[in-house]
Amino acid sequence: MALEHMVWLTPKAGVSEEKMEEILQSIRVLTHLPGVVTISAGKNITDRANSATHGVLVTLESPEYLPQYLNHSDHQAVGVTLREHCKVLALDYER
Image (cartoon, rainbow, N blue to C red; front, side):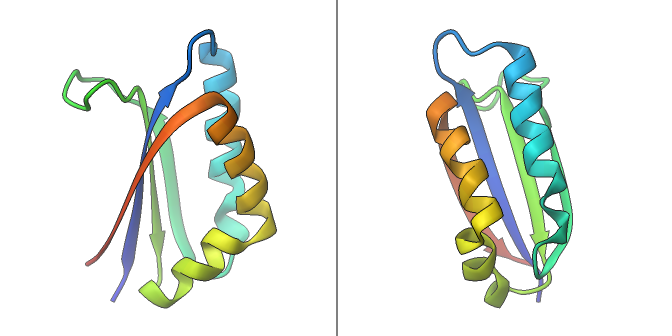
C-alpha cells in the first residue's frame, strides 16, 4: 500500500517567489531517496488552502519508507531551509 506525504507551505514575510522556486526544486530532486515513487511540487493556484501558497506531494512505495525518507540527511538538509523560510504543515495517508 502506497503512502502520500503532503506538505503545505506558506512563505514567511519577505521570502521571494524565486526563493520559493529554489526550495521546491530542492525538494523535487529527492527522488533518489529510498522508497520514493514520485515527487511533485508547485505553486497553489486557488484560494482554498488557508494561505498556503505552495504544495508538495511525495508518493512513497509504502508507509514503512516514511521514517527513512524523513530522517535521510538529504531530506533533513532541505527541511532546515524549508523551516527557515516557510510555515510548514504536513499530512501523511495510505492509499
